[in-house]
Image 1 (cartoon, one colour):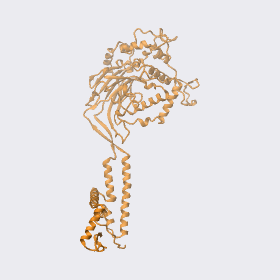
Image 2: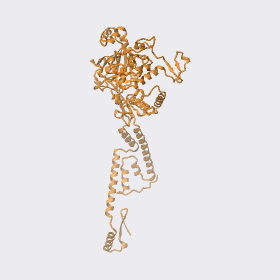
Image 3: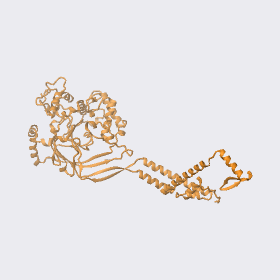
Image 4: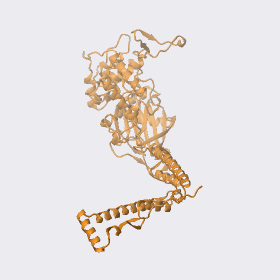
Length: 589
């Protein structure tokens, strides 16, 4: 390489400050650019330095992109608490409508196709019977009720007629052309097109539609009352009663009752595990009150949920059969999710009437399932101009008639839009930011044993005269009607699932510092050097501005001063020294 000496700038100027900064900086490559004695060397180090800058900028873009991806990691831990909150427990009799309720409502009997009562009013409203039952607080038959007149060759007692299946609906389906299709066992000759519904399924829809037409407060009179259902209740060995339960009406199971809902009192806590320190229930399901066209099995539906959640027994939970002790061991799972911008999770404060139609009536919080059902309900109301029978809670709402083909077609269209994700419910309904789940281990044993059966029978004799009579008439009464349930914590350990930020602000600063140090050799000290350089530049600019202000004079003043100097010196004008310099050396003209 040729050793062509490069000119250097003068100290005290901006170029001089830059030269001094480049020669003394701790950043890699920059001092070599300044100290190079020829052009080729200087170009080489400029290329090396710019290459490092380019790689640094590329890594910076990767780091920043990773940060704005807002990724999270999931941490799963097992924790222990000496005292855990006990969950809410919802129980529903599998039978939604009692047989005895049909005695007081001819319209409901018409839905089932049962005969009309003697003395029934022409309008068939049957409201008087229901209202008398409601004032009495029980769903028992009115003592002066007139038995209905049945068809020829039928049983005189309507309840016996229904339970003996004299009026059981045939399992047939009506086609679109109005013909009736009879389902036989000849499977090979049948091609299922899934365009026909069985009569049993249609009957359930008709009953649900009829119940939805009633005011919400009046529906409970048609189902099993808690005073009849609850035979015995203990919590950690202490007696509990119907006053410890809240109720709601479910379209599929009728009356449902929730223990420890949190709305009546503070949430119950337990400090010990095992069946002795949980909830113990003995239930009387009134199997003789079942309507076979609505329910083919007998027992109760149980849902274990958080106090903040609206229970949906049609979707969640498990069954408990009569004649058995159903043991339910629980383990709590606590889930915490990161809020926006790391996820779209929602809190109760984010929920409103469009995302939780159950909050106003049942005082429940936000859950994804409640939001999805609310979203679907609003879509049906918007497209079909009516309220779905499942979600009709207010008298001013018009219920969707399941027997109207246009309404049915509209609801099926909305359901299809929902299934295809075109209602934006999946976007609107995010997971809750905090959630408590309960993992249940369910086991069953025969209950009661022969030794305890006699003691239980004595207690049942005291329950009511009706139960006493049924015990005398039926040797299998206990195994057909009594359910035992134990719900408790298996252990006080709980699983904690927590979302954590995978890449936070500290990680960004650390990675950026590592990259700038790798490619450019820049550190915090280098940044301090740059700050010092900027201060020097500011000082230099201030001095130049101040000097320029001091040297600024008017033309007349300059002329007087110039004439005075010439006169005082006595020298010819052409020999006087001009006050100019070239690189600090005076010159004359």
